[in-house]
Length: 262
Image (cartoon, rainbow, N blue to C red):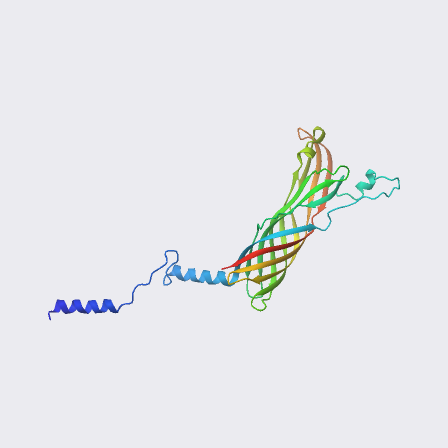
């Protein structure tokens, strides 16, 4: 056999003994590359430590209504009796404005199997109502992120109760009712300030399968909103400054949500 033909047969045998190339997903990095190893490490870390989800929450205010009493004994409510108990002026009610949407997003990062952090975003809205005719001056709003640290223990591989404490960082706002804001040709304004609040939470996660879980949630938030009430002419010139009033926004919230684990 001639040498060139022998060499060709040897090369063909070696080619046949080589393992076939494995198909590579166009969306996943190859395992043997540095990018592939980083991708696998990231996926493993997310699966072990990170969860994302969304909740529906319903809150109620601790101090939402105040009722004046006829302490003067004249059979009617006088201005002094009203002002003694009202939040400000004739405002006697702060009515919680709840959302019916599953739109409170949150992220949980487990440092280990016993404790971690949760970052979520929430909004607290309370509509004002007055004593004399029940009209509204507007709606107070607190919205912003809530960061909590929690401890948890998984039981029976499915149920994970947790408890935690944290801080809420709220932006304050007052959505003025147009009729009240421009009443009698004047310009009434509630300038609000940002605030922080202490948060206490209880929760329980119930696994549905390898990736999805049901989230049960309860939270108490100590919060308030400071509002500076002024009355001005329509050109903005203030002639009556009523100072700053603190409105209580301490509330309890209950929630139901879905959690996804990577």
